[in-house]
Image 1 (cartoon, rainbow, N blue to C red):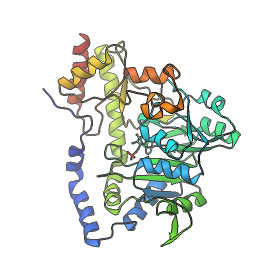
Image 2: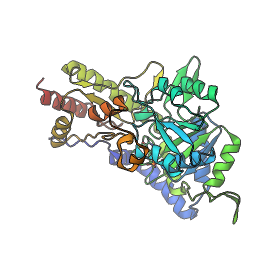
Image 3: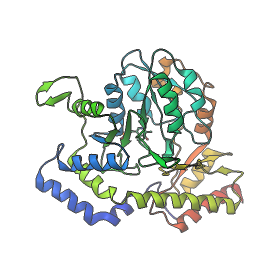
Image 4: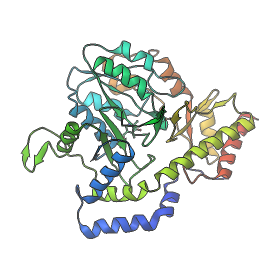
Length: 377
Ligand SMILES: *Cc1c(COP(=O)(O)O)cnc(C)c1O
């Protein structure tokens, strides 16, 4: 029996060990741990690669969201339009500021917010729209931006799962995080560009906002011990930035490898005749999917299939089993089961199977054969 993890970080480390170890040693020798050259260099490089002018390194993707909402002035009583089908942090950031998340259902093809429901969800209290580029594929930012601009509402992009994903429109590329007021990136270890601990970054084109964010991450001060705002302590640290700097050099080929694995899966599943049982993720035309997850829809017996795969050495997981409008912590918002049928259906059907650059073709064949075995094909 094989043993295939959902993500194989040890294999990745083996392939870059010397570079990483040297980068870490350099930081240790320098004894410069907070907001030094490594952070500055990473901010510059990630911003450039995201197609924007500024990057602000912060302690996590969750803080990138929180700080972004703070910076655009989201406060008690404001409404923020978002998706119920995402990781908790997206919505947690809104609620922590005592603002109200206003959910719209998701599109059943790309799992992202349903664009057609965004406008009708606006009220005079709508302060921002917080879309999530789920699993590594962007929502149509062209269309969303047009809707937001028409009403003068800011967009904060949750690009935690979609670093360097893009959308091609004519001759230009819209890179994840670059079209909103800010884009929020996570360097959580399992993300496509993962640190060896927590980390995150905010990217933006807005100079004023960048300056404000650089203060908000150090308790609202620009000059030490003089505080213009009430911020928080949330910085990307030098060790993580040094590690990420090494990994950034490899990210393009790693994303390409993920895309290759995704194509292989689609081919193998089709050949095996699994299409009626398992629906592979679709890549929308003009969108560069970075496959943070390869998430299939299982049409029959999802939970039994998951158990069967786990028992046969294939790690797989449900992202996410309970949509956020049904979470206990948000009960006071008053949402009910049945209100967002597409999100609820997705929660019942989705299954993420292993996808990472080091996954071998043989391992993919094994996984697809096991799925076939479960359905008896
Ligand atoms: C990972 C993730 C976050 C939070 O990032 P952290 O770095 O773990 O705080 C936010 N939103 C989404 C969609 C995520 O996947």
